[in-house]
Image (cartoon, rainbow, N blue to C red; front, side, top):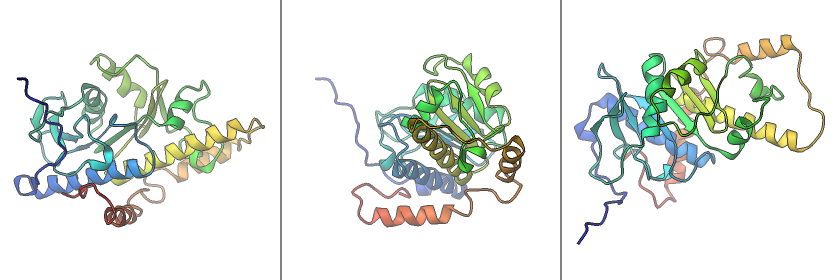
Length: 267
């Protein structure tokens, strides 16, 4: 008789089996998954968020393919190298999706300044990714990306290593990328910063879809105003967006947990 696959989502804690720095990264990454779910940016069990594990080994943490974002915990994350080889993962038949490390591994390898990478398939994000005009600078939220976002043409599902070079090229030095006919990607030097950038990019896309659906003329600020505004939102100009907001995001999750049937993200 064939053995039934182990698709349970009850994972034992590994807090005492990893370094304090790795555990902190695991907790923050699990929190990021929960926040992406909370703000309506999930696509069933698909997509990935990764974070670089502190240390010289060039390892990253990634979700097991098949778990809902709202059930991901610090202990359920898999640790892989940049080529997708599994360093360690829970005892389960859930596995690591190849498309995850093709996209994420390429960016982590090419951009040492990047600690976290987030990729989504949202309705608004995919809509803007399908527009020839791309992201329009029609709101303060979208203007922050003016001149600071890349575009990558669709090549099919991201399963071929040959695409990695072009992904990295199209991202360049930016921390945001629109994957044509696909979705959105943000990255950053920390999980809070990458999350905040994705939240803002998603909001910009939703705003654009709503404004264009109104079928009225859209207002575009002057080039000078666009350049000045975009500059004011770049890291190092005023403050690293996401850091100040992060403790409030964690308080939100802690409050939500009180009425949740899912395990705490920090477990």
